[in-house]
Length: 96
Image (cartoon, rainbow, N blue to C red):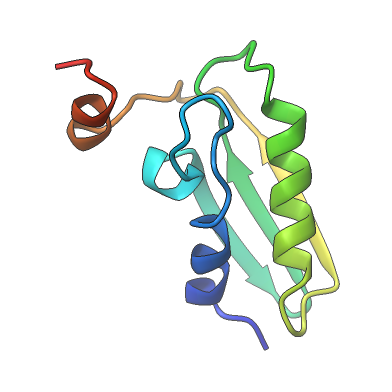
């Protein structure tokens, strides 16, 4: 059975195709809930008009579903609160 840590490790392999940084490090994942064989993930994008949004949702669903014991993955996209990069991310992106 997959654990939260297993899911986080998978999320770390999914890069934002515009920033080339993984979605976990970027802070795009707000919550992970596991109920038996089902996983619910709440996430956001770097902006509401993110052209990579559909791709990121598909990658999250596809890769998490490959974990042992996971049969369904629901991804909820929210913009509340809006994404705010951490100081570390700002530094990597030259925003400081």
